[in-house]
Image 1 (cartoon, rainbow, N blue to C red):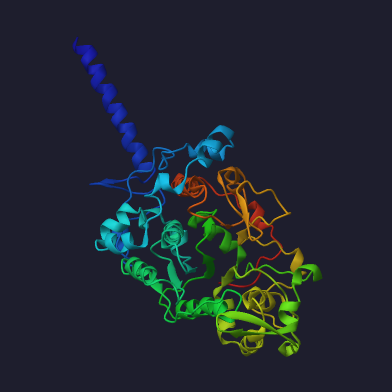
Image 2 (spheres, rainbow, N blue to C red):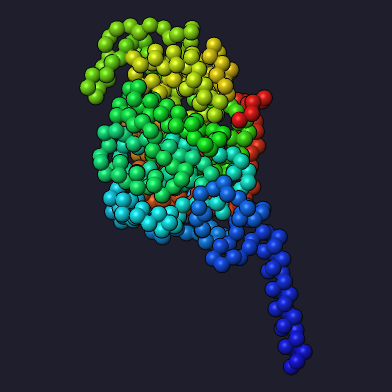
Length: 446
């Protein structure tokens, strides 16, 4: 009997020893309620470079479900019966996923509880590589604070910095809700100058420029700037994003189009003026751009190196082009692209090859007639549904455009669950594809 007891005790001691060895080797330290992330390699108490830490519970037990209405894993695997089930769920069935504006005003009265309940990621998710590579963001919104906040939460890290632009003509409750959220964070702010945005006019471009100016003056020495609308969602974790941007090495990721059929040349060859809140075509011919610049079209959204942002705001050629664009329709679709691709401008991080041949990875969108959309098309762009997720999670792009919180809401909810689990997985990120991109900066330093 005593021999059996001794064997049991010995077995328990060996098991306990193996557990302690595992914890030490993986740098997982149990301290009250805090389970240290395997990302961290030294004591956090010596660091004072972050806002207050938000504790997130153990994530070492494999993927965690946060969507209970459907099985997101099955949807991402392409299970048609689960996709069909997701399609039947309306926003009325999941009211608590996207919050109403007035709820933000109430919930943010206790900031610590708000950040904990909304599951904002804290320092325990941040690797040292990420710490040394802060990223700046701007988010433009006019309504639907709930969707904008879900995007903000997905990209939030306490060492990054975030500028929000709320349309000047947005409802008062929208402004109040955004102010309520911002007051809970040291690294999120509303831009110092708001625009009454006309989305085909110069005010849309100025909204981004206002955030750029504020971000450049901030204490955080960020490496890259990314501008987003609230309908986008990330396809990469912050850790993966940093690895990609480090490979970019000062190069910008901005779309370039010169193919005549896609240039929409009437927008910049004819003068447009704003009358009231509408853009009007005067029918008058517009003069050529300054400095012998060749116009290039692209997206309003992109990934900008810090040096490029400084160039945009302070270089005289850039300023002259901005003045010329005052009478152009949708100038945001020409300004970044022209500065980035024109050979005469020679902007930092610019591309010297054929614009149309450069891969553009900042945003993935499905346009009508180009690819299959399993959601629905709105103004020629796919609004993703549950059936699109299997493709989205395999894309090389960094963000996906676009989602509507009230259209097939399980699509966005499952993307949130997938991204969160991927953040905690700690799995290696394969960078081979990005290492071989033709536009990487060779000699620049961000």
